[in-house]
Image (cartoon, rainbow, N blue to C red; front, side, top):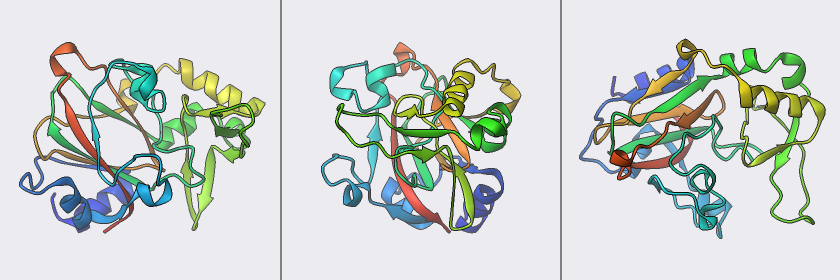
Length: 230
């Protein structure tokens, strides 16, 4: 499966697509441009320092990385989340491409259906969250965990950069913190070889990264956000 039509179909029906060693001679931007329309984050956040293509390397926790997952979790396992969940409408897709990978570091996927099963409908329907405040005077904008736009439904989720605003959201956070995951419900993906490519529907799938052992700290993954596929 390496043609764009097949990839787009799989993502529509399953929420993700994994392609082994896909066109390793091409760079990430070239591959992403073949797949769909690239979202240039810098145009929306010109002072954030987030480029069109982002290089992801495991890092130890530090204050300088406080606005990244590595700043809080370092080499430990990341919690399940949506990318840029604090945006009013998060990016629809993200593409992860292996530059240097290891078989003992995984990207796990949690389907929307599993998330909705764990977070009961009574909580999900009314749960409100807002971006984490950077200062006490910052204006907050309430957002629903579950949202609908252009006739399609999606979810946003982030234990670190979103904070609950009401009782249903606090209950949802409590459930996700202590959820006993069934391994059969989690989809593992191993970005191990150059060119290995994982494309995720960011509205339909949560994802995380597993613990990075000492021997795998030179792992390098490139990420790009996409507005559309196909």
